[in-house]
Length: 85
Image 1 (cartoon, one colour):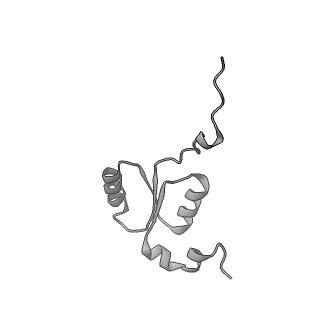
Image 2 (tube, helix red, strand yellow):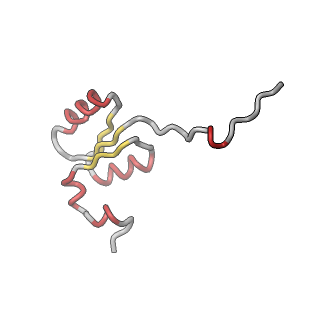
Image 3 (cartoon, helix red, strand yellow):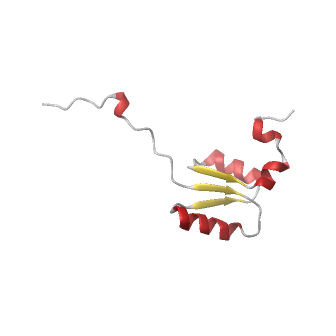
């Protein structure tokens, strides 16, 4: 006999890679990323600017994104809209 196909509700969604994106321009970014990776047990990728962070998000998926407050405050309208007027 053949086994019935799994119900749609039993199919799990594609797995998001367990990697964190850290968007920061601080000089100690590498040390910070290494500490996060060690504490959380997942790799941490660094983007040194908002532009590099956006490029990273376009090419890959991340389980979490951490944005340095200074970068977020540099252009706050980008936090709330996809396009500034």
